[in-house]
Length: 463
Image (cartoon, rainbow, N blue to C red):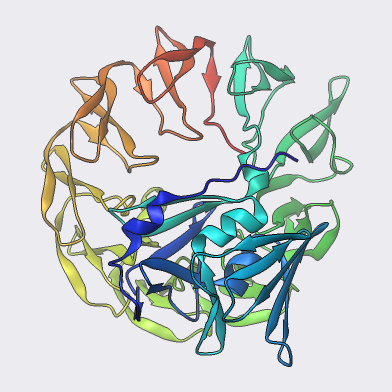
């Protein structure tokens, strides 16, 4: 598997150089577009940002062991073995000596290492988003070829980022890839058999036995059969039996499930982690999950404690995206208007918008009357309302609608790709799907049409 190492000058941007240690409470870590919950926050030491080794390495699929006697950390992922001595600037990665910018250190019982060490030791790509103060980590395996579903003549297949057909268009339906697998239906002649998953080479994961199949998250996917739901792992093994009326995906180690007529949460072993007492529940995001109780929405922590009392109006299903925490803030509705609360339940941006998207890349799209603009986390309108439609930023750009045509702007509000498309999706893996003359293709961030618009429909690129 090809490893891509990014040795980063960005580290100088993560703090003011000093010989001491300071906590970087505002610095967060995102792995594969998911924020990582850490018991100890990152710190800044001698101008370098140090992050918790165990939390990040385990999220990247490595096992971690601590030897108290020798004060040595050993991490193993596949055939890679990493050894690190506390207070030393030297580490051993796969039998080779690697020097750290600053020594590994222990803070509140947790080992912290320079963020660049993550890149060097596990081949992950590491970037820095200065606006949201976020370290962005992409595992080596996630840097491999992404695929997009593409439909032509009523049949779906998959293409790569060069436009090459990887899986021929023979499917009536094609799901997006997640964690290297996609749900697809199977037939024998004209007879429908069921759903299963394929990998990025088109290989079948397991016999197509499922009536419902959701995307993979944290190594597990929800599958349904005969009106009940359970979970399989990425080898196709049934790890949690069919016994729930409804379920959602795992996030931060827990998944919402419906027991009879009430929702609760289970862990990855299928054990009840939070008792079923809610009328509705969403996945955990940044340590909190939105729940519905007695007609009002509140937020619980992963122990089931009601951290923010149920007091907000229930948001209709088509607007459920608006009740997740994202970048430490969540959208809530009060008297029919959208505002934002923090994790203590404080209303930090007063409810005055007809509609509001979650924060992404430090900005949130909001509706003022019939036009959309963008606010920052202080509530300041940084991009004035002038768009007929807008969504959230991804990869530094967002699609916007002006006068019935779609284009793209950057976070300063500058028009990067002029509005000339019938429709446009968000950027993913460096490309965005656009509709031209009723057909779909893909553009890069300079607006170049890199995949010809010849498909009846496409999805975004995923892995």
